[in-house]
Image (cartoon, rainbow, N blue to C red; front, side, top):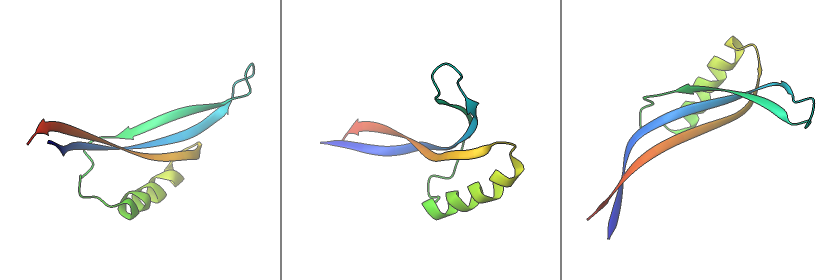
Length: 74
């Protein structure tokens, strides 16, 4: 049986940076914050995001958490 162990976590914020003239799609800029505590809850990450967004020049598009796991055999 395989076991997954979290090894790292990252918070990614995506911001709108206008529209692509040709396709009409939203252009996104991404800011990543590495070394997020793996025990951080969704509410804690959301609170951090709410504190960071007013410091940005662009409008928030999405919030993502990117966890990396090491998969090993038990």
